Image (cartoon, rainbow, N blue to C red; front, side, top):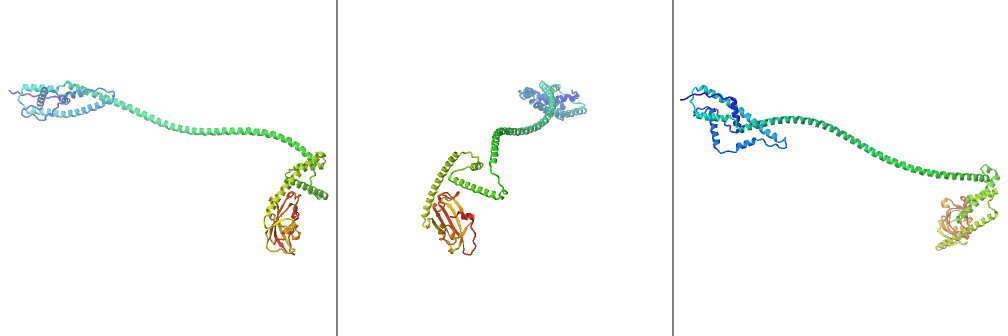
Length: 504
């Protein structure tokens, strides 16, 4: 007997839980959207029957490790010491699984709605349907119950999932708090960075100012050292100047004493000194004659002084003048006996010096004459002089003609006594008016001729010499040159008296 039963409509929530359980355990099957062929069983019952059969096969089959591995994978990993590394990775994994679950649930909801529509259509179109086998239906219901029930492993997975979701939410909250704290720290760091930049700028400025101050300090130290050194030198110089001033002051005091004494002596000398003669005084003939006598006497004294000086005897002119002044003033400081002794000693020194000078001049003259006479061109005059014609000249000198003769007179040691060539002067006169020694030598020359004449002391100035230039017993050497010849009737220049005085 066939009894028709209408299967009740399963609530949508029951289907969702069933499908979620199947997804978690990994045993979710694709639900057919068409009714089963041959048996006329609704798709849901067919699905339950298939699940029951699969369950029976799993129970009879040997155990596999995949489910346990899946369960083991759901266990919470041990916490690492680093709290911020493991939870984000686990959260991302669970988040991905949750996303896949939501997608699957949405798809299954659409399938459940389709199944409900099919069941409603089935119930309306089939008023009567064959009564299924009770045993089979019971098995199917049992399988459906097993499908709808949640296993402990699934419950553990859901619990772990919920815990992970809560941990993820807490992690999000913690991350948000950390992000807020990080933003706050970043703000503080930015502020600190700005303050640090400002401090760096201030530090650089302070460093630059410090460098400037250091340089200025070094410069000031150098200036201070230089100033101290200068002050030290100035102090030393001041001490030296003070010592010099004291020495000069002492010397000045001595000089003042000396000046006082000299002023006293000057006053005494002025009282005893001769009268200061002026040109107006010399307008008086008597004064002029007396003054001329004084000049002559003074020149004789100077000549004697110069002569003795050449002999090596020095005399003090001021002392000589003092003796003359005291003699004229009648205030001699020496007695007659003292005067006689002093003069005798002086004459003895003069005689010794003169004899020595004469001996030296004689030796030099003899040596010079011997060397001069060795020349074959040297000839001897009738008087005993020696001459050598250096240049005979050009035109003969007419008889009675006047001639200009340039004379150079020297000693045997080369000392020049007189040089008319250097003075640009000549001796102009007729030949017969020249000294006999010159006449005999000049007669051998023509116009512009020249010769060298060596005259022994006895034919020259003799033992007296010609003070102060010509020493006693000196051999004289003359260089004679005829500069020009004047025939009778021609005007010729007159020779200076001073030059005629020196001619032999």
